[in-house]
Structures are given as C-alpha cells and as structure tokens.
Length: 273
Image 1 (cartoon, rainbow, N blue to C red):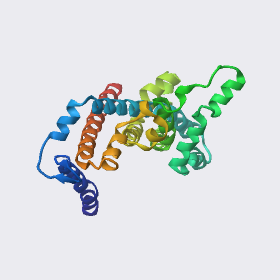
Image 2 (cartoon, rainbow, N blue to C red):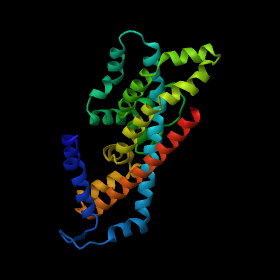
Image 3 (cartoon, helix red, strand yellow):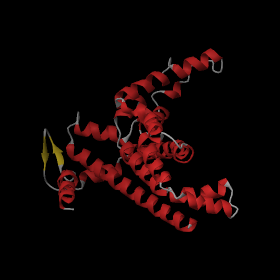
Image 4 (cartoon, helix red, strand yellow):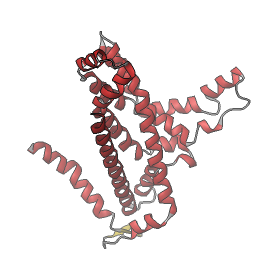
C-alpha cells in the first residue's frame, strides 16, 4: 500500500492542505496577506450571492445525477440481461460518442439547443410552436441536458458492471417461488446493483458540482454555477484566498451530501434484505 498512500499524500492531501491554508489568507493589493483569518468564510456566510450560487450548483448537479442514472440504468440493464453475444461491442457503441472532445460535445449541444437550432427548427416546421423556445439555451435547462449527456458514460459503465455480477440463479429461484418481473427487480436486482448506483452517483455528482465550462458556454446568467465564481477568483480577480475558501466550502457540502446519500442507501439495502 505504500506507493498508493504516497501518491494520495502527494497528489491529494498536500494540495488540499495548501488550499485550506490559503483560504485563511486575504488579498492585499496584488499580493496576499498571510495573517490567518476567517474573513473569507464570514463573507461567504453573509453575502447572499455565494449561497445562491452554491444552492443552484447543488440543485443542478443533483438533477443531472438523478436524470443520468435513471436514463442509463435501462441501457446497462438491457446489455447485462438481454444481450448474450458481443456485449463488449455494445458497451463500445454506447460509449463511442464520449470519445470525442468535451468541448466539441458542448458546442454540438449549443447548435442543437440554439434559437435557430435543430430542436426549434424541427418544432417550427411541424407547426407545434409559433416561436422558437428561448429557455432551451442559456438557461439551467441547457446546463442540465449537456451535463447529463457529457457524463452518461460514467454512469453506464459502473451500472453495467454491477448488474453483470448479479447471480442469475437468485432471479431463477425468485421466479420459482412466484415472484413476477417487477417484484424480482425491486427485491433482488435493484438492491444488488446499488454499488453501481452509488458509484455512478459519486462519479457524476462530484465533478458536475464544480463544473464551470458548460455553465459558461450554455448557462447564461441564470445558469451560472459556483465553479464559475471559483474560476473567476483564481483567474481574472486574482483573489486566491476567496477562491480557496469557496472550494473548501463546496468540498465540505459535497462530502456531507455524499455521506447522507451513502447512509440512506445502506438503510434501504438493509430493509430490502
């Protein structure tokens, strides 16, 4: 374990401790005042804009995570239980669109959701709308759709692995005892696939909460997230202490939500067992 622990120490623990230390500094002109203070955290607590952006980020990431898992679960389930030949080919085909650049996919969705994009043009040609739908682009809707598509591969793979490992004899025994398809799914398949659901949850929720590229390109004023503000503090504003404090607060919120979700999942799994 020594190489792994050393890597985690150098690559994770040291940068996090450095970020924590910087969060207690303050900006002083073009430099930093290294006197330790809670001023940055007090400002985050008192100024409404920080709480609003944090709440919006957690809400958008939560919606993205739930939507992505719900959409990818049937795909992974079909490959795991109904595809008997060339399963790896199916997995490759499902993840093939995600081999392209992240930015290219964002710009593709910008074209699709645009005021004169594919969706609006199709609906107008069918006569279903009288004017283009303005809420599709530069809004939280655009951010949610784009992030859900961009991170779908990170849900499909862990879900498929978890579903593939389920012992099929358990389902056969349940069928012999009179359980129907729905009852077998909720009593056996879903509880046993929860490790994959948890993995998908963390793999999507954690990075999307701090994402700033998609909100910057597709979100507009109403779709900005806390990651945009953090990037602004480290970049244009050059206020590293405030950016570090925002990063620490965001990390703590993600950790707290993750622990609550993990605890609830364990309770549900125990009740199902």
